[in-house]
View (spheres, rainbow, N blue to C red):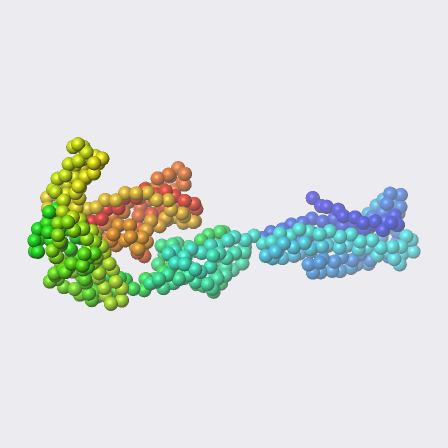
Length: 427
């Protein structure tokens, strides 16, 4: 529906214009028709009239015409349209219509009327940047509708990794976007970009098992043994291993004839250990560039079976407290000569930002939590959504990508998700 704006000359006539407005993502258009009107009872004929218009966003013009209309009538003198392109800021352009009858012989004079139009800024969305294990880099940038996406030049850093660029997927192995570059045709929506990393150097892998044995050559665990025995399963990372060593908090002397260099192997060592000693043993495996350490504790000797709490608590190869109940087992568990895997369960709340995967652990986090690196060939991780009704996304599985463990979700979510997990570490 048109809107009419008027202004009186004070001489029984005035100027008017009718407008309609349309807008889209690109700009704002005002369509107008302007002319002269007479007050009730007044007529005008054959007078010289100059109508001019001005658009503050750019554009103007004028026309000179004679008018002829009866009492209280109107006559259109000109029409047109004015346009302003939308920008990143709010605008308020003004349309002004003026009528000049100063040279007319009857009721000479001038009159003008103006109106300002509210033009909103372009639609925009925020693009956030996730370091994906790194730190620094840009926090966010603005994506304006129908414009190219400009990636900030700032880059994150991560020790031991090379930054490859940015991707919409945190588990991608190659980058979609590079810092300082501009990209055409990207989505006009809010989303997150994740840093993609390439590991500079893979450290050696190692697992450490340590326990008491009965002799300097023994390999079978003995709760009352007076020797310590360690087994280190090791393998090269980027480079071959160059050294393996064992130390402990009691500064004991360890004896070994195992190889200490190469691509992979098993290193074993013994040392005397008094029955009352409790020590923490550390294995150090190095390739000359990176070093991997593993630690384990060997406790004082314990009776094979310990009973406490008036028979309500039983310890197998470990003591029980005065209030303990049930069966408590120390050391490794073997069935038919085979050592059983270790089981761990837990739950954690993980924030997710516009993604269909939730990161459970990085390699460093997994090693810190479970005492060894994840072995994709033998270990197992299961997961389930603990509050599926709340988030509307269910866990479909767990994947190991770029040295990180991710819970794969059935749909893309933004928010926090609680995941119950099960970790099985093979012997």
